View (tube, one colour):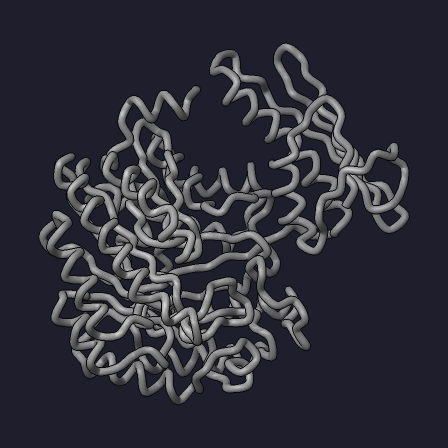
Length: 493
């Protein structure tokens, strides 16, 4: 879509709204004047007390208008001013787009990845749950079903936040290898030459574990939850897993009863020997992720296993003594259908894992785009509706959610759990309740404090990670569980 701005240059917020409302479109900034097809003129007028935005959307031979007015903050500086300018522009664009589309998207005009933060903050500021939900409805046009999801997750976020101590943070350790690359993903696989990089990668990772562990200890911090993700951590063999987990336990100050999760994910990486190592190292939570239990779908997405392999891996994991198992499903996979998704969901419910996470397909950069059949938005929405109804009926409740770019219909991913099995790590990471220290390739650390967030990102690919390891170790040596005043000042200025 061609974008024309007057009185502002708020590209980012407008592009995010475009992505939500017209997911197949990409922004174009032409040199020619407006007046053609498939374009948006967005004008901002500034007055002493108000920002007023006007949107003119030309599409399919018609013109659609939207207008919004937002009060300027009497005080508060440029940050609040920018927030109000963006709000006016997004609202004007939204109103024009909804008139054009004839319907509102399920999350209304929300474009962020963390919609739960809105009701959480409102309730922390003194709003009742009813008032917080009314804000989602009236100010952001969120649908009743999504409002209920957000409110349920906000209640769980507040519960977990109340259990945290100031010195606590969480630890993420990334293993960026998989046995094969799923066609919708952009992770590297551990086949061929990539698998040969694992020993060197593990050696480098253990250096980061040691350095970061010393920094957390010296700062008086403690680790509340540990999450091994990827990729697929169980791409490592049993001895490598034991070496890594032993180092984590040796180097980091873990709280009593520290939550310990490993993303076993791919059933073709799960063996009795590896499960014994995880159990002996105190891992309490593990994922066995089918995505689908239909073989044609698994073949279409490039998985190197069958649905029967998933069933066997789940049974093996349960027999190994794990009492907190998560299973991931994806709505909208190629070659899938509403009927097929429902069959997978019913079989997973019959297995009775403690956690079920329902994702909406989001095609990553570098993923395949030439699918023979992708379920359309209405069918994906029906899959998610079915999952909400069936999971609630089976005794599961939503406890965290997030959204992603390039997600079908601008929908959501939702983690569901039985009572007592909500993942502290998932909630703290997604709702940014405390700092998360991330190690390994692709790790994105967040230092949180004073209402600010400072991010430290490691390179994505193992060879780049090892190349930059000296810099990474220097950064981790300075890590603190709480964002200190010096870094807060850097972010503010």
